Amino acid sequence: MNRSTLTEAELIKSYINGNENALANLIERHKHKIFGFILSKIQDRNLAEDVFQDTFIKVIRTLKKGKYNEEGKFLPWVMRIAHNLIIDHFRKNNRMPKFDTKSDFDIFSVVRDEDLNIESSIIKEQIETDVKSLIYELPDDQREVLEMRIYREYSFKEIAYKTNVSINTALGRMRYALINMRKIIDERNIILTEK
Image (cartoon, rainbow, N blue to C red; front, side, top):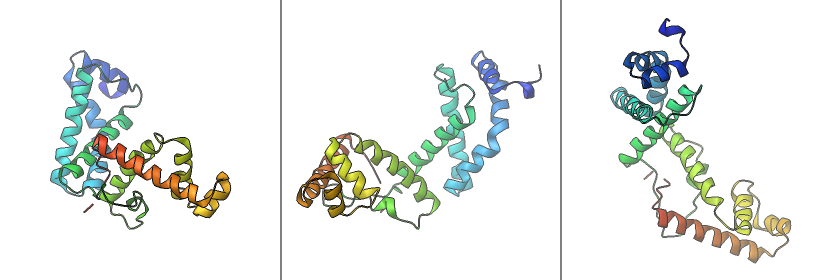
């Protein structure tokens, strides 16, 4: 059977069974799209080629370990790997945004910057994901205030009215929410964010 007519699932199975050419065929099918995506984010051809190679090293390792289970979704899976490696690249090169988690800070200040270059937009996306996952670990009353303030941009007066508490209670819940998030960030050594 001609390799070009094989499905991705068949090619992956063939590669896992020892046919190295099957992976070469898969890479050939998607290399322009994947490399184009990486280059659009990193904007340096040599670095993009490194990340592209690292992406497929990770793909090969995952396939060889038998841990691939994204049948029919090979390209999105590879794109996710590439996306994570791009973020790792920015973090390793100290190009991630940073802020001091010990002092008072607006955890979301970086999320609101509208003039983001491509590098920062990837970082922003990752930060939003990280922050949203942290929010779900807060007690319900703190999470509610935080979400109303940050995502719906309610004033504390509106929050107090909608949650049927005093403004001081709403402010207190926000303060505890930020303290608790800071604790989680410190305990897990999470790097949320650019100098």
